[in-house]
Length: 165
Picture 1 (cartoon, rainbow, N blue to C red):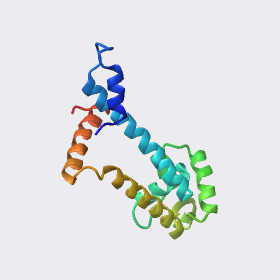
Picture 2 (tube, rainbow, N blue to C red):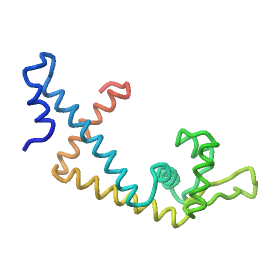
Picture 3 (tube, one colour):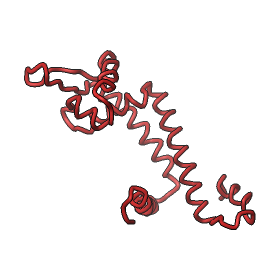
């Protein structure tokens, strides 16, 4: 079984003294998979009618757990947005019926943002489509191989994030 990275390595074999074929194979394949996942997620979002920013807001509310609500400041912090940028994102979500904003505890200064049933359904559709796609990508690996790959990649991520593998 060959892939595009094997072809890449064949083209460079013997021409670069510093080329480590194993390292190039690992990094090249990680790069191909990263591009594939980015493109696939974009296609799934497009098919589901959501934009990435919309999905991220719904995701943050879903992650909060029932009743799927948070304050605007909590959302802004989790999404690394200014309050103004978040407000601009919440308006269309509210207009589409995916979220509601209401005064918490009767205090108009304390706003809560909550997923509506339609917002939760949109998140679940999107998440389910991503799950199917992700499972298809990993299907050639056995469950044990998937766990091993996850463990090996964790070591690389720890290193990349500045920790010790």
